[in-house]
Image 1 (cartoon, rainbow, N blue to C red):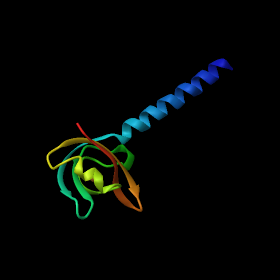
Image 2: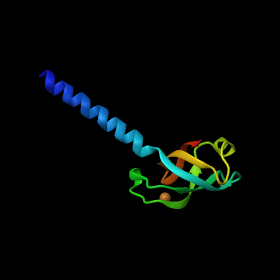
Image 3: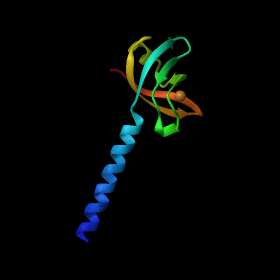
Image 4: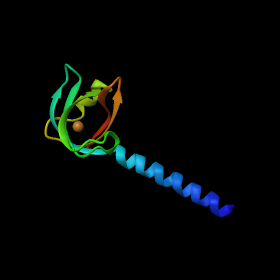
Length: 94
Ligand SMILES: [Cu+2]
């Protein structure tokens, strides 16, 4: 019984680690449109969306995010689909 509990704990830990890793995506900002609250990012593969690397436009959850980065910055970001649109949830300069 003890062995089973340890195994389950290990699996939970692994799946949590995998999820966190899949969410942090590397990219480079190519354009910022503060008025529209949008950001264009050349991003690496995003497992979460089964998407290869590409350059695309994201909405932002908070427009204030756009003041923390500029075109040309290499970033790490997290994205989600909000109301069917790809949206940056978190972004951080590398
Ligand atoms: Cu994409």
